[in-house]
Each structure stands twice: as structure tokens, then as C-alpha cells.
Length: 148
Image 1 (tube, helix red, strand yellow):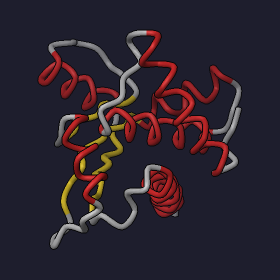
Image 2 (cartoon, one colour; image 1 turned 45 degrees about the vertical axis):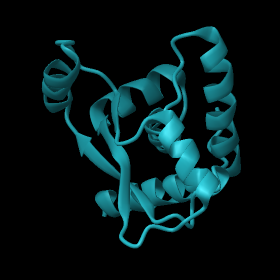
Image 3 (cartoon, rainbow, N blue to C red; image 1 turned 30 degrees about the vertical axis):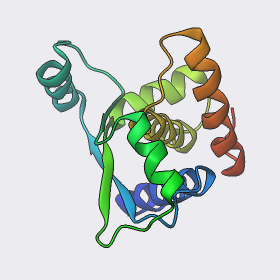
Image 4 (cartoon, rainbow, N blue to C red; image 1 turned 180 degrees about the vertical axis):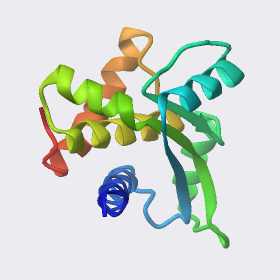
């Protein structure tokens, strides 16, 4: 029952992300794995050489300019094609929801949106990049009524 609830929420969030980016008709999808802290730590170490737990990891299949090209063409893929993979630690979602004083659903929604925009090629390390990524995330959360 709980897994179905997560699945419905994740599908709703991803559908909104794809629509917001005008990518909902292109036959692309994102794979989401919900996991535990020890597994996400293993993946983080394996792929990023960072030996610690984290909340969300994103693995894009395309470079940002390739995604821009796909969107510009507006051609639907004949077969569904992966945009990328997102791995989320459910335990971290719970901890952070408590820490930030909002619902588990809001934090999970944020992790999915955040992972989606990383898969899209956005980043938040530099301030100028953060100023592009954050408003996109907030717009999706606003539509979903999952604001802080």
C-alpha cells in the first residue's frame, strides 16, 4: 500500500516535470530506484568516489545540449528512451522531511524534481546555475502544491 502511494506520487511528479519542460510527448522516461542508505552509499562510492550516504543520485543519459536538441526537434521516439536514472534514499527523505519541518511527500517530491533536473543537465554548484535550476524546481512543486 505504501509502495503504491510512493509510485503514484512519483508518477505525478515526473508527469508534471515532463509537461513543464514540454517533453511529455517525446517518448522519454526516467527510471527511479528507491533504496536504503547503505545501498546509495555503495553507488555513491562506486560512481562518484564519495564514500558516504546521500539523499539522491542522478545519472543522465544525455548531455544538456543533446537534450536541448531532442526538445527542439519535437520528434517522438519510436521506442521509449531513457532520459536517465535517479536513485533516492527513502530513509534520508524521512530524515530531511523532519529536519526541514515538512511532509515526507513534499520531501520525496522535491527529491524526484531535483533528480529530474540533474538528469536534464542542470546543476546548482555555481550560483548562476542555481538561479536557473531552483526556479524550475519550485515551479513544479508549486503546480503539485508541494511547497514548503
